[in-house]
Image 1 (cartoon, helix red, strand yellow):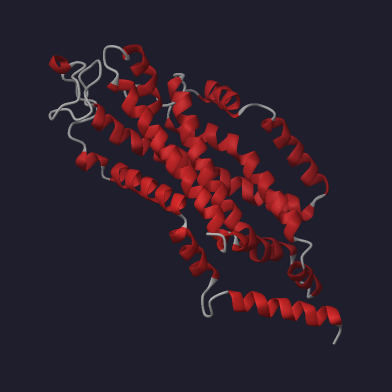
Image 2 (image 1 turned 135 degrees about the horizontal axis):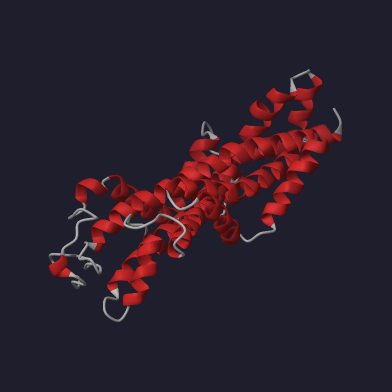
Length: 303
């Protein structure tokens, strides 16, 4: 037995002894996340807002589109907890329904970007050659544009509405998912377990999707969380500019945009939707930070 083999086995025994016996990687990751303070804060904020969004039609005090002309710019009170807007519509009800829009646009767009970007990155990273060169140069061209500018161009072509907003945000995010996956594949495909799979004649498709993909899922999960926060912020920015979800739908971005015109007369109009955007984005970013540390075995010991 060579010295190198003995040293490798010794290190493997040390790494095994440092981990709790009988505990899987998934359980260790969950335990690490539960110990991560900022990650748990982000998880609580995200879950609370998600529950409010799911229950919005049942718990909203009023219909989000119903106008109460006699109660225009009514200040926050027991009747209207967060006040009303220029048409007498309840701000709280509109924020709750708007949460459904933000979650839907953010998570659906990121899901589409993941479903398209990850396979492209896997194939480009493993196969290389002309496919890698063509796809990466195309994505480089897209990444040369600022995200908001590229989304504005796509929205100008597709028009306003939830579906165009989802597609625009998804297209903006596809290059980042593809390039991140490609980089991970470059790091993984030279490792021993991939070389062993090639040596025994495993087909490339199986190696890509059955062998390499499970080892890059954790990185993609973190990126999905952070991208969802960025997607929600981008949707709010598009609606703020009048290119996202058109009125009278209660988009948080459009509420902030209209509310800024009435800051002196009704400051609550723009402040409360702005706080909702900030809370959700901050919660997702904190959750992403916690997931990054919890899913990385090297960082788990520092939590």
